Image (cartoon, each protein chain N blue to C red):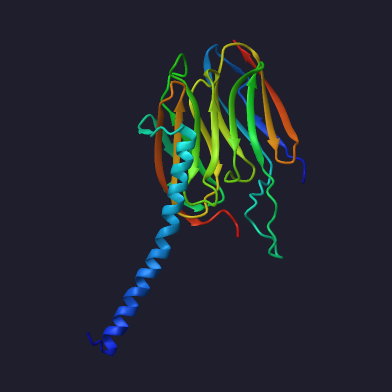
Length: 151
Length: 108
């Protein structure tokens, strides 16, 4: 096969686009993988179900240094229906861990609010572990205008 | 660093069995260990890594904190009060110091 100058140019451009796309995609999936691994560590290998847990976060956070988030879990908080702990993870941060809340029957409700840092636009994951061993999770995407991790 | 100053908001009184909301804030720069100074050296991590709340000696709420929590960490949570007593709040700093404060509540 003989290639003229035009074709060669086109091929190189295509390859360059592919290479750039490849580089841009890989860190994101790596972060998601690490978050998934951290979730498994938290749940003890159990796959979390959807439902019961709600995560309130702004759709667009202008300042990634203080992003308010609220997490709450439907639970009677007595007997066996008690939320033991809730972990918050951010997929796109240098370290995915944000915070782990520990609840007791004296908490009355399984809900907590705090402010977190987000490095860039990313998914925030909350996973709840109940006393009876069941796990629930929820994911929310937060768009960040100015990142909050320095550097 | 400057001494961290904890601030806590707890209602003065409540009905027995009521679920109250507690708001806490502590002044702390929460240095994440990710930032670099002008010379390009990493500023070492210095954060509050743990928070606990107890009521009359029983655990109510706890939180493991990672560097992704904002400066001046703010925490809001709930507590069920069955009797009058005292809430004790503790923040644990990376450097080993513990900041404590307490608030009384009266149950009518």
